[in-house]
Amino acid sequence: MKYNKLSIILGVVSIVLILVGCSKTETITGRLDLSYNSLSFDAAGSQTYTIKVESVPAEWDVESSQDWIVTSEETATSITVTVTANESTEGRSGKLTFTNGDIDEEVSIDQIGADIPGAPKFRIMPEFASFKISRSGKKGLGMSIAVDEQYNSVSTPYIVDLATDERTKLPSLDGEYIAGVISDDAGVVIVNGSLEGVAMQYVGNEWLAVDTPLTAILSIVNDISLDGSIWVGYIDYPGSGSPEKLYQPIKWIDGVMQEPLSAPVSNIWGDPMNSGSQARGCSNDGSIIYGTQWDNYAAIWWKDGEPWQYVARELQSIESISITGMFGPTTTDVIWTPWLQANSNVLSPSGKYLAMTYNKTISVEQQSTALYIPMFTDLETGESVLLEDITSGKGRTITDDGLFFYTTPSGNPDTEMVYDHTAGTSTEVKEWVKETYGITIMGVCLVDKVSPGGNTVVGEKREMTGFGAVAVPFYITTEGVL
Image (tube, rainbow, N blue to C red; front, side, top):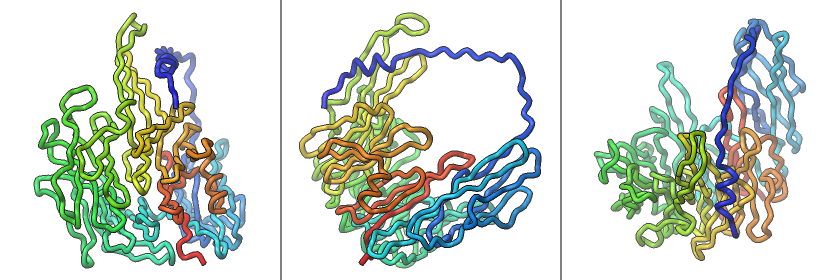
């Protein structure tokens, strides 16, 4: 696909002067703040939410648009929301309207439909803060996080059998952890610290530290091969800026940490590395590993134990351009970098395709402008495809048959699309889910990963809270469907 860097540069280089004036002072007479703006429920109605209410004046009322939306335990500052079971196979929607006089606020309510015999199953899991599926989409690993009486985080992992819906509760861990990896037979289960610490593996009914150097402050296991023997991730040491204190990309074989993978010693400017590199994921057989050179987020990869190499190196460049800024003529650098999302889902299962974002950054007089063009690269041929009409999107995941999932900027949160490489067309993800699985998803949804053969899709719905969007994990699966 052809593209014109100069036209994009000229289209985005601008200096905006904002003049702020104030001619009068407005008096705020009241407010009505809610801790949720949207809620999602499964067909059984097994979730319970508590909406916190901050109101001036203090008195407020709430009204439900549907009789299946149930409110209870109302206090001066909160109310509990549940729903009755949905026996229909169709999803349903409603809302709660809060008012304190002059101000009205709404909370949208979505509930999925009951299972259709012989059709794929759709499950949402708002009780999990994170959720990962195994390579073949047979098992899931969910993480529930609670706060104890001393306000300390406690993390409780669950193994989910996607065919039977059976859940196995594992021992809780002190602190905040996220779901790491799980093998198809659940023989390998690993969780990672959300901020720091050593990755933990569930072995013999207890949690044991993953093989990590004693001097390291962090180890992360991001992905696992199909047979469970190869893990990939990275480690970190205290401090930064020297070779022995950089992120180091790591491969484990049968639980034993190997020597760090080869990695860049300088960034794309030619300066010594300040942050290091990380391994993010691998192919089914573990022969292809991808990651990021963390100074510039540039995409790198390894094949069959060979030295590292940049992905789409021909698209990586630094250009100096002359422009006229607020204070007259100036020269600045334009940086183009194939860039990765920091997750384990961007490589297709066999290792053929890598989903990325073509990032262009230009800084003028301490103001930065950036473009984010969804792209993917065929690692077998070296061919890259850029969706140039999208200048503020990001590549998220891709399948072996070239279904490329990417986000577009259509408000907050973003909308996800799927590009069919064979047909050369894009479809909104919700439409693709409906056409492929017969499932209707209400609200905003993003697909994180599609298992080989498409038997399981995992992703997230977006619920709006008073603090912004919150990801609610979901999966669609044909496992256990007769």
